[in-house]
Image (cartoon, rainbow, N blue to C red; front, side, top):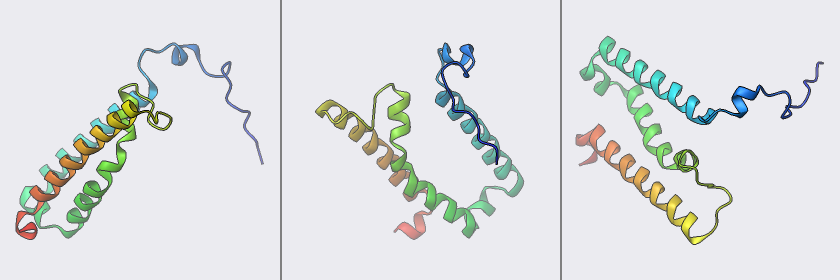
Length: 119
């Protein structure tokens, strides 16, 4: 069994340490590009009507709608705030406002996905 040495300040390349763009932002950008590309290819391949009829895609949308408000720590962190350690009134209001925005977006997406089932 090989044990890797711990990551220290000296073992990380200096261009990553001195970078103006945080690695989280880079990974979010690549993930967003991959998600958009896969959605576009899915819509081109199957068509919008077939996607709307698919029960599997209904489950994917359901998972997105349920998980979206719980991802509030990512935009809070990208905005430069400190979500897990800021228990001040300002920190709670910042995090709470972003949570409400994501909750509203989630409710709107869920209501728009299948209007016949919602009414």
